[in-house]
Length: 132
Image 1 (cartoon, rainbow, N blue to C red):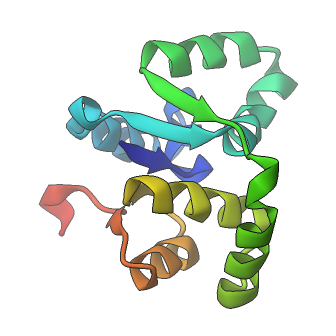
Image 2 (spheres, rainbow, N blue to C red):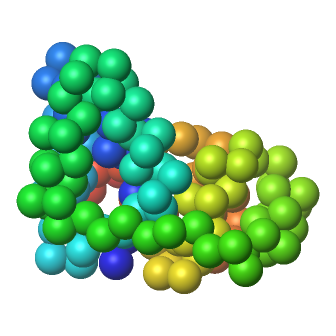
């Protein structure tokens, strides 16, 4: 499974987003591997849709894409604190990195998060194969 950062999912909901095609193509290219997202990250990705009144439709799209949402377990608090202290990432990105460590792969357009994930030994999908 590949863990999604909000930056890789948010553009999927908006055809006018400059990252829409890139995000859609990345997800399509890795569909067979499956996708995971933290519940916190999913909520973050749905904020704009909630403002527009289309959060339910966006959540239905996430479900149709087979993206599995995982809760942030309370027992992860110490690990999250350690990751944040080590990387300096914001807590939402720390949650993403923590989940990605469980699966070994991350999709993001966030360069700071991608760098921290690489430093942690994870596979990072942050470009399309033809743009490498």
